[in-house]
Length: 310
Figure 1 (cartoon, rainbow, N blue to C red):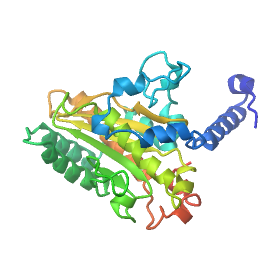
Figure 2: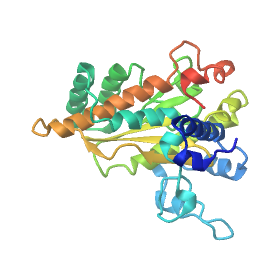
Figure 3: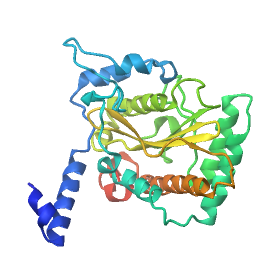
């Protein structure tokens, strides 16, 4: 239905509320991956392993007519409309809940929040011999705090590629999961092994493209915007981003790059970091179904209100 935009500015409280709800409902109804673009799906399928992707080449690509065709909507390069995505809170309510908690400076962290912040700082501040050591430490503390097992998974069965960790459908083999709530990208430190945000988008696109190609899971792909939280750990640094798939795969940071050093002389930073981690936990609790079997294909749409999948 049409919204009286003048009423949004000058109407009564009830008219303003009604108009906003109508706008949000329209946005949610449109929040579906675009499966009518076979060229884009084919492009995703032909990608090299995410760890080998050259972001510059993929983002500066052009079609035969010379129009920009960036692979992902990550706001790079600047000034290219095709590279711009939608604000995450308008794409999915889980991202909105994350932002609300993250920006709520009045939020008082729980003891569990503070204990986890300390455990993560301790794990990430260590020097490691190999990336796998940091991955294992991150998996352990994240699994305990978030309440869901973090697995190393392949984006598609039979693929030799593996993520650095993910929280996926608990009712399925990790490599056959119907949905993915959180994806982890772990690096020994800043500047090592490529761009973790772009690699995360690469794994995410491969995961959902495989579901779209599978007859048993295609309907699920068509009725969700594929909301996934990307957690980048780069030594003693963390960043949390929102990933979704509407007209293309979109990647938008929800937090800046935050250091995870345990600097008690800077309590404001410690609180900021703790609030970001608390927002992550809140979002995971909203996006991961609570009921056993809630992610089965036959139940996904009927359980939409509980899984927060539009």
